[in-house]
Image 1 (cartoon, rainbow, N blue to C red):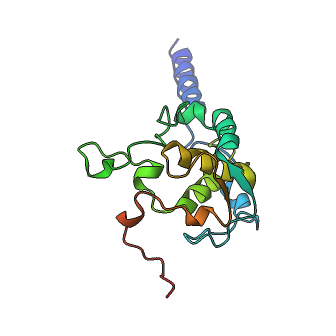
Image 2 (spheres, rainbow, N blue to C red):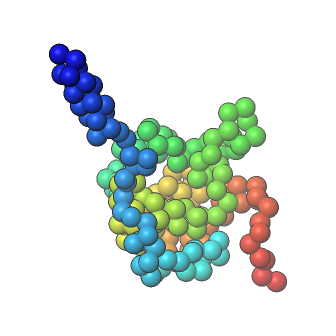
Length: 176
């Protein structure tokens, strides 16, 4: 009887270790392999250096947003299980500041770079340049930063002036 109790206790302890959680979540693809791909191993600067060729508009982006983004960011981009993307312009000095793309980010090129590197959360690096330009256009148009009919591309995206452009001290060198 005592031996059966010991065996049961050992089996119980061993079975618990089999179900222990991993120290990290296995989302997306291994970053070490992705970082070796030349087309993704680049930095996009505020002036648009290294932006890939492509184009997209808000209407195209709306379809992509509902397909790839709305499940986490909500159908209007104001948040769900993930942070809100749109709205709250001017809220940073309020009692309840909200860091959205329009309220916080100083450069539109950051939006492109972030989407490219991290979204959708379950398949980063899966979107084409055209799709990312379209999603950027959609998100920026939701806050009136650009008009719905503006086409974003490697030339027009860096020219977009964000509402919080002057809210940061830039370490990016000015070209005089």
